[in-house]
Length: 293
Image: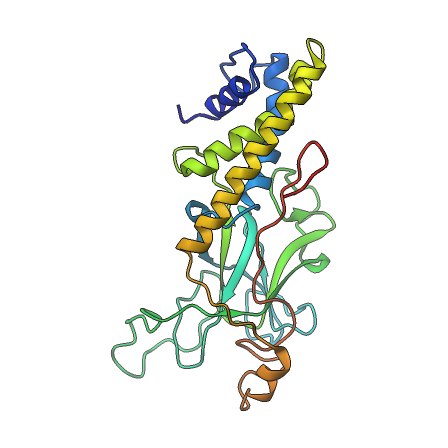
């Protein structure tokens, strides 16, 4: 009961259909309708809340260093940032970039340059970030045409890559990592609220198409019911996120950060300084009746 076809059949059950499919790609009309909606519903729902099961943290791959000190990276970086990183291919929603403070030694991601080769003291293998609170640094998601893939090397299925350029993350954090909502394809990893929300969301998207030739009025009724169920589940997820997460109600003010910088986090510097955002929240989820939640 943990296959995409199981989710699709639950959606069919929810709208009162007696059809059962064996696979989303089997070619029947119902399967075709579900296949067209399944991927988009999954991705949009992942962006609708900070789902705990989809939280992922990875070191970013360096594309460009404005200082020119990275031998395997370019030096053209979107102004006024210092570093430019590749957008993770499985990232559905960037949450935030942790700040790496001076004196700390975060792990060096593959492809990034390392300064020096021999330690000058012992004990450098310990993790100085252990037990520390994660603080966000400013970053920005953008598109840069300087680092487009070679002609003919574009796969339409790879997120963030095109002949016109690629999606990048600009940051003033060296050796940056990203905390984001990842594309989790396997239902065995989902929590129960997400699964129920996806079933209702998918059902609302296909209800009219499934019932259009048999009973259009009934299809519209089922769509409305499933939209309300999906909205309720999304509300539950956002409440759980607020209760389980570790957040601060402090609102940072740029000019106060600048005034209190003391020569470290200047307006274009590391840490909290610079343009961009400290993090992205969840998105509103759009529904087939034109509403958003």
